[in-house]
Image 1 (cartoon, rainbow, N blue to C red):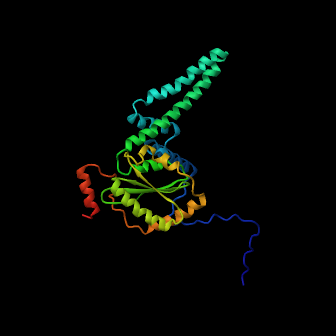
Image 2 (image 1 turned 90 degrees about the vertical axis):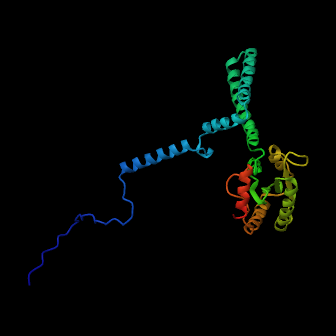
Image 3 (image 1 turned 90 degrees about the horizontal axis):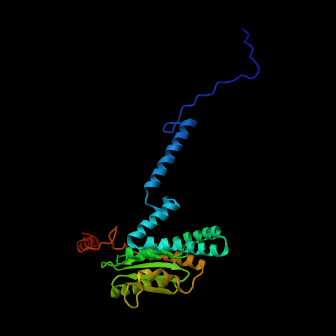
Length: 281
């Protein structure tokens, strides 16, 4: 019987095992290719944000510029008011500096105050311009509800009829508020039905009703947010959470609201088409 060759002892380097790539799995990129792909994705994201009109995609300076442009369309006096708010503290600072012997410090301090006042002026006029922009449009109460603090949870258009009268809802420290928008007589009937539904679900919680409009006994759009914010505090944070859960149960059993998708029509031809859409024609 022939002798077997002696096995060599000692560490022997084995070649790496070749593994076949999984079908459909992405190929591994080299460091250079990965860096190039990351740079391309970053450039695409930057281009998307630059072309976007969403304020969340804008920088702070671009947000201010956009707010100024939109406000100036409905408020021609805006540049003069902002310029006055900027220059007045500077002039007062210079005068005060001449009297005290610290002109530079007083002028810089006045400039900082002027920039702050100009920004406050822009915010105030932008808010007023927003109300003027949407005044008279169906569903404009939603604009005022967006001005409420974060403690308020708003749900637009929880009920509506074929005449485009709608009811909005907001829940917060001041309690449960239902806002009616439309023809006063029809809106009050719509509100009374919603009050009964909400009282059965949110038992023990006072349901406030507001009719939005310019007539006596109504609350205009520009004062709606302040009117709701000034309601006496009646609910704690945990109570708001509990009531919100009950309202979800109410909304879950609601039938679809008979409102066509998109902006509310304003012309007679559009109104006729929307009514046909509501009837399923």
